[in-house]
Length: 115
Image (cartoon, rainbow, N blue to C red):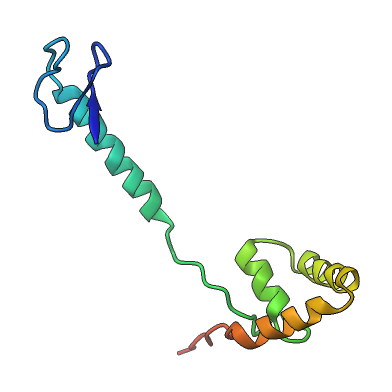
């Protein structure tokens, strides 16, 4: 990683104390870089609950696959169902095989334990 001089903009080694071009101190640039990296880490770690694809246990008509996909992709369930229907008609039924394979491969969402 390189460090840019705040005065002249020259590229310097990451651990250099002074700019090789103008001799200016690089402490401010290093502090800015550290703050930027910390903010970036905090931003990415705030809501990083890992999304997993499951078939729905509650919103299902057949297998719960459409509801699970809708939740995973943050779409309306009815839209996903309509897209499956359109894909089925357009593909001549081949999408039915894909649907069945996905329904077998994708697990049901975990049961919520009530105490």
